[in-house]
Length: 512
Image 1 (cartoon, rainbow, N blue to C red):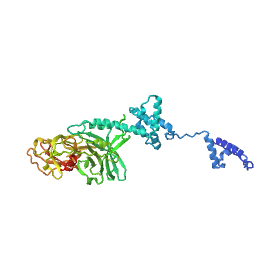
Image 2: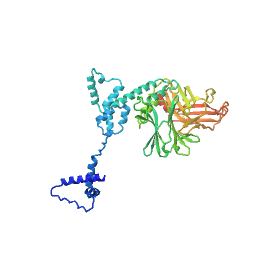
Image 3: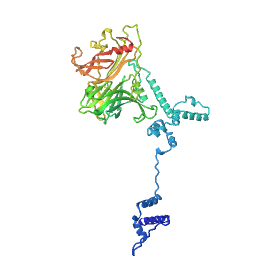
Image 4: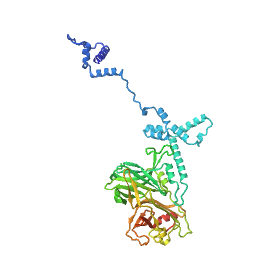
């Protein structure tokens, strides 16, 4: 190698000598002492005689003849025409993924030519541009449909048509109504057909978001219960708010299963404050591992005992207008329900005070404790007190209407590792129908039983009395239960609904 380098350097020095201008002083080589080595070897052994610049030039000329530089080729450096050709082989979902890479990919993924092809392959030709008599007309009109529209037009058209198709199918499922509940019979099928699921978005004080996907859900007659649990909850001390959102796939008609990483739409349903949670919320119950706190409306937060850490979150959602609230809002704004238009009646002096129906469901999420329908509930004008109509559902004095509770009363919960049952805590679903059998007052919420200081005055039930109370802006519910030690079961001996006169007046156009 040393001999080869010496030969290269000699050739380079000779070339520089020939290229030197006339009259330039040439340095004579030093005379060789007797017995010294040959000129070639001494020259090769002394490369320091050349400057650093000359040495670098020699090496670059030498090595470039043998080593070729590798071209830097990647997909982003491809011409736009080639990328469009690649994008034309993608399906709609993959095309949306590609558009999230960068600004250039986003612009190319909005190409009307690609989306017009996807649109025409999924939907029947209903526009006049498709009514052709020859292939020549079809080509020219296709070009006009692409060139005369803004970028992304056919992408939006395709997405809107997909959403409309799913909405039509869902509306067909929710048309049949259960006469006992006044709610759609096929809510479960409609939820699955729309690809609907629910997430909670936890936000800390710095605005950072933590999105938690649903881990489990169960369907009941009038509600759905969703459970979130994880081993990587953010610290409760830094959290400020919790948002409950319904999420649906942007393209729900795809054959592939909905993915949490796919394109989805988010609809805000409720927003809860987590600041000073243990002081501002209602303690619902506890067991050896967790303590439960209720947040209105319908949310239950489980915290590990002895630690300020989240164990699980549970939500109970009533079916009434659930699909609208879960899909028609935006990520920041809740869907506003259409106001009810009252039907006036000047003939009935007690209009709005009678013919109410109640469907009551007491459950633990998966296990049903009691489910019943009560008809023809009424309130006399003399029973209107403190701004509430009093509807007696189950009376203490009417033993025939007293109802047994099936099994033990408790709320079942689970996480990735643990599970348990919080006694004397359950979920209550209330559906009140008006005289036309339309939903009048509906809710689903966690409640709890507490030992009452009252003693049972009933000879048929000798045991402790427990009470359950619920209240919101539209009404109140009061339940009395008696525990029978002999049979180890509860009996509902008193059940009263209190409906706000403001709610009645706004619904019927009355003035109670």
